[in-house]
Image 1 (cartoon, protein in one colour):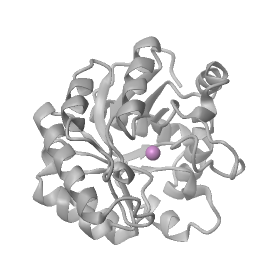
Image 2 (cartoon, protein in one colour):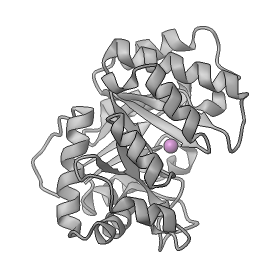
Image 3 (tube, protein in one colour):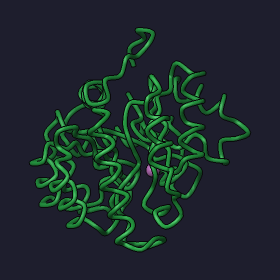
Length: 261
Ligand code: NI
């Protein structure tokens, strides 16, 4: 399996990253895309990927940061994105739940990063919280489908999923699909074409059942996979195979070592 979205540069991994990576490997997670959310975390993500075969990096600026980014941020992001271990731009997008930054600034930053991704031919990792319509509008207007990407930690309904898929985007499911109150999400899972589905943990956030409330880590991807497989009516092995293929293809991952997991 491939964990397509984790934040291992988070402080909560500072004391035991070695163990976390080992447990990931042991539970069948062959590769992890470590995702930046501002310039410092993106920089750390690139540095970490250089040291670990298991890790790839994504660099981007989260909508929460939109009000705080300096003029040079996009220039610096471009520099970081040129690193060979960077496989995507993100996370980027819109967050109308927390509204930590004004919406117009979030939208502008989202558009700028899509344009950057297009100029670098990198897929994008999209964060969307309570902003479905504007996310779709911006993806469409900016022609984001030319690079494609993923709606990470998908939280929409079937209709929104269908519209994202129409734009050629992938859909990634995370811990919330295992929660008892996730009926909408459970209904969506089975309808996603098997060649468009990805798995992620979003660690350290959103640990799946039975770890809900604890620090999340890539090893727990197994719980997400088991639940999604059940919802899709296929075996966890079949699900691992197709989601791994999808991740490799979308992010053009060259995974070292041939241990099957
Ligand atoms: Ni995230």
